[in-house]
Length: 252
Image 1: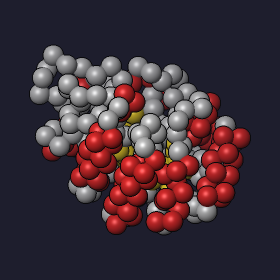
Image 2 (image 1 turned 180 degrees about the vertical axis):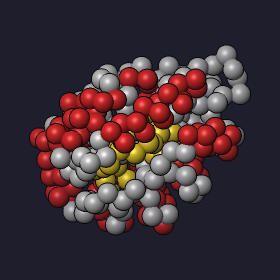
Image 3 (image 1 turned 45 degrees about the horizontal axis):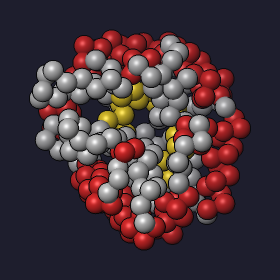
Image 4 (image 1 turned 120 degrees about the vertical axis):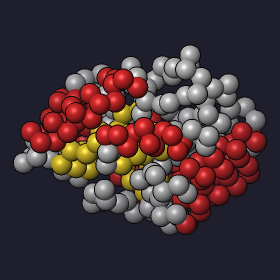
């Protein structure tokens, strides 16, 4: 595995390990480009609200400084990029991108977990109505059209508990939309490692037929995940079995 763009840090409150440990484990794994993409701090209009799974807004500059310092220190061994995993919330997105631009990130990946703008909405893991999946796909595609996202992380995080006909219809719409925008989809290795409901073969069977670009994303919440060669091999085997051609070379 020559690259990984999906890497978290302890700032998100649900990952462990130091920034340096992620870089050193990536080097040990033979990764040539490591993108560190912790959950971006978000500017919510309701100042009393704070999401418990992302860094605080006052950690933005420290995060950037740490990643950039490591990139310089280890530049002979690995290419380290500064990124964010980011939700797309239509009413907040413009201000959010302006806020993040202060540290000039190298890229953002979309990791959509909510509808609307999160406040008062249902977490994707609790969707119980087919129309919520349809709204989710529409919001994701709207976000991808902004051009602000390098790829779509865990595109199959939703859509596993509805009628198959509806799931296939919406997954097809998602895959075709991403294909038209030249946005890769991610086979999420953390989901594979922890035996979650994703990666979902239904989605990736459709992606194979549509011809989507597909990447492997470790979604590392612990430094050792970056050097789990068996996990990477499992992801590659899934892609091979489904007829998916992975993007092998770094593309950011």
